[in-house]
Length: 378
Image 1 (cartoon, one colour):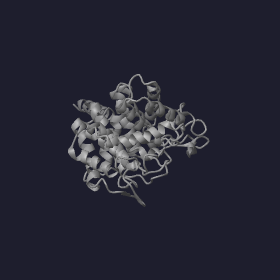
Image 2: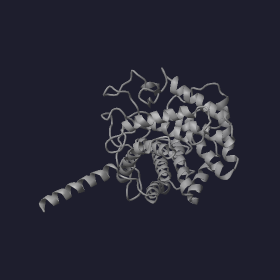
Image 3: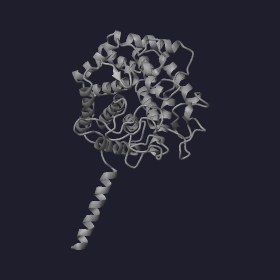
Image 4: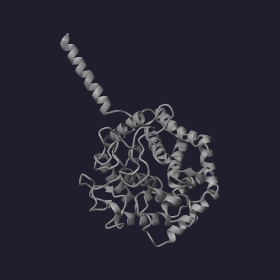
């Protein structure tokens, strides 16, 4: 009898252990509930989307941090088309006259990141005012022979999807041609020899982090959210360009190589450190980079670019722990978001109760991850 009990306990332990290791994604309903809870926190805290943002100084809410939030909100609207989400976006766009921050002549990708949402809104309404300024701005960029404007890798996510979306919306390949030229320049020429390290499948944030710069442990500095920006940009581009676009395979090759490198850096608890190769340099849970990696892998699995058996356990662990440990159950606040900056030491401390300087972009990243998981689950 005692032996039977021992065997039963052993079997129970194996089952428990296996269910932990091979945790499944929640249901669509549960995923959506988590996403709407976090988004509801933001919309409740900032009920008027037309107001400027105050972080040390007044800033128009068309800045890149808010633009990333609206990327996430538009993704949420696509699976849950609530009137409140549309109005919150429409009022924001109207306030800014559907114009890039600092006008139609800006070459700063942070300024025209908001055009991603303007284009999405145009697709819903076919109201030309929503897209005309994005076109004027993009045409200026296309007609400029300089390809070096995306000198920091965050800019790839801020700017590249704008050109991808316009190419599809207007059926005009010139935007795809220019985005490849700019991407390739940042990848292969920016700094000493490009921002992408093909040997390790990851990106340096800008030329300040090219070798010989090293992390405290002697390894290369790969900032999680910076690599997340590139990874997300590849998703948003691949979702727009046709199968016969000349450089689609190049983008897919980079996406697959990044996926392998990102997977190899995952922490045991499912998150990624802000410094992907050095857990000693401000290591710990971080939600914005983790969300962007979930977003990319979920898209890759859903579209058949990535192997499901290989990558699904990675995002299951990340999502389940993030929902359990980072969302405040009382109000939906999202913890463990690194503040703005460009390297591991910036935006610290990162913790459950720590507010980043800007709350919006972290929530936008979370919405992108959750909505893509929702589609994968479907």
